[in-house]
Length: 90
Image 1 (cartoon, rainbow, N blue to C red):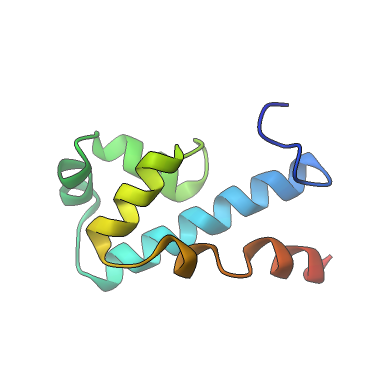
Image 2 (cartoon, one colour):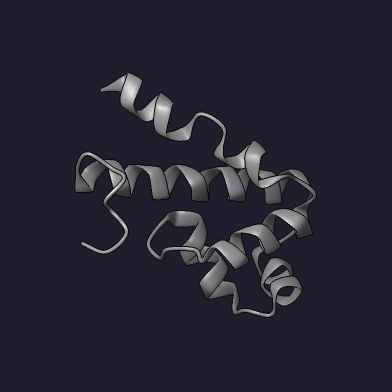
């Protein structure tokens, strides 16, 4: 499984992707930016943005940083405690 080496299992990998997407979506909505507007801002389709936000597609790091920049949050704000919190909940 590509990209899962850091996680203890595949379910953890999926849950982390979903949590990153959830946080991105929440931050976008707090800025009153629609998914269509976000796609235009990032030069991708709104469907790509949606897939990032629901965790069905891995978001490349360059897109992640771009997304964060466009909504005015730091990548650190999105990523803070995600893996630690997930592991603590297990």
